[in-house]
Structure formats: C-alpha cells, structure tokens
Amino acid sequence: MAETIDNKKDKGKNKAAEMPFWDHLEVLRWHIVKAVVAVLVFSIIAFLNREIIFDTIILGPISNDFITTVLLCKLGNWLDVTALCMDNSTLHIININMSGQFMTHMYVSMAAGLIVAFPYVIWEIWSFVQPALSGRETKSSGLTVLVISFLFLLGVFFSYFLIVPLTINFLGTYQVSSSVENQVALSSYISTVVSVTFAVGVVFELPILVYYLAKMGVITAAWLKKSRKTMLVIILAVSAIITPPDIFSQVLVSLPLMLLYEAGIIIARRVENRKAKLADKV
Image (tube, rainbow, N blue to C red; front, side):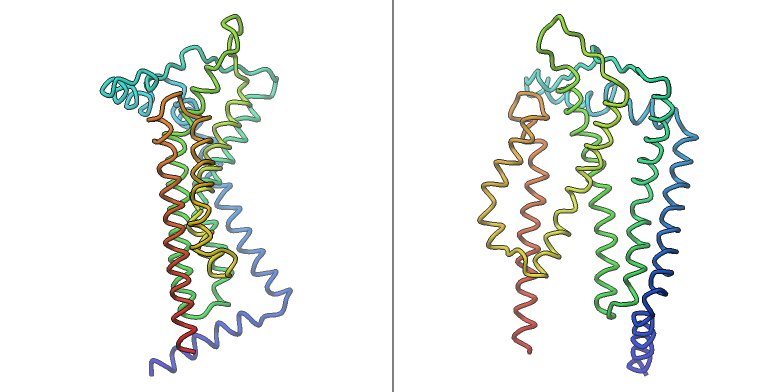
C-alpha cells in the first residue's frame, strides 16, 4: 500500500516535471510574482517605520550607546585593550542631494524588505524546483532551504553587530590629517552598511556552496585542506583592514569565517564518502 502511494506521488511529480516549456514558464512566473509581492510587503512595512529603520537600525552603529560599542569597550577595559573602545562622535552624516533622503528611504526600505523576505524567496524557488525532485531529494532540499535561510540571517546579524561597527569606526574616523574633518554623505554611509551586511550574509552560505560543488565533483576536501593556508591569509588580511589595529579584533572577525571554511571541509568529506558508498553498492 505504501509503495502504491509512493508511486502515485512519483507519477505526480513526473507529470509536473514533464510539463511543456511554456507551462514551466507560467509556473515560474507565479513563483516570482509571489516572491516579489513578499519583498514589496516587507518593504512597505519598513518604509512606514522610518524611525525604527533609520534611527534604531541603520544609524545605530554610529552611536556610542550601540550594544556592540558598549560591550567591546567593556571587554577592552577588562583586557586593557584601549583600541576596542570605539568613538564615532566625530563622524557626521550629511545629505548633499535634494532628493537624497527620500531616495535613500526608498533604497533602504527595499533592502530591508529583501533581507526579511529572503527565506520566503528561497522557499518559492524551492517550490518551483520541487516537482522535478525524487522523494529523498525533496526531503534534503527542504532542509537545504532552512539551512540557507539560517546561514544568511546569521551572517546578516554577525555583520550588523560586529563587522559593520568596526568598518564604520575605521573608515569613518580615519584621517590623513587633523585638518580634514570627516563628513560622510548619507548615500555613502547607507551603501557601506547595506553592502557589507548583505555581502557577509552571502559569504555565510559558503557551506552550502561547498556542498553542491563537492557533489558535482568541482572541489574536493583534499583541495580545500591544501588551500587552507591561503584562505587563512586572505581572511586575516580582510579582517585587519576593517578592524581596529589590534590582534584581538582581527581574531574576533576572522574566527567565524575560518570556522565556516572548516565546516566546508567536513561537508566536502562527507559528500565524498557518501558518493563512494553509493559507487560500492552499484
């Protein structure tokens, strides 16, 4: 009886997978429409909550009362590392375009909508691909969607609460001369916060990327282990650029990225072992 039910499910999936090309496009169109609507809904919500989005979230990292700034300063006092006490009081955000603030409001609202709706967007993509997958692939892909969403949001939070404040402190307070005052354009500040936050969210998808590349045979665990030293140098170099000039801050940023890389090695090894077991059965 169970086999009959499974066969019916597989037939249903095969029919969906064997639809004409234009029918596939129609299904894809509706998935895209739903994803876009979700992004627009969250964008409108963000647009209507301007004070929370800008005063609390976007402009939060430049405040000396920001939670990361306060905690790092306390940690710096405990470790006797004065560089961890960041002071952004000299940083002034200005607007130099007539429509600058309104366009920035629109841009940030759309970015916020995309970030919040990201898990749903991924789910819609998975819903489109699902009919062509087998039962086992469907279960694993469903877990993949959850992992992708979790890693992205984890990267966004990690970036916003650690990398963004460190980046703003370094770039916003850096001076070639005491005669030159930092007055940062609103568009430049927003671009930095959004791009860094989104980019780190994408970087946190490294384990998922490694999984599929290993599954396709593009990379191996051995190659990743061989490239470990090079990747460590790259991560340390990037961390040194965006953090205050002390080894503790550098390690604070680089450690999670190296952990992701090590997780990628473990994932690649597991994929190779699974492929080897399947090959032995055949």
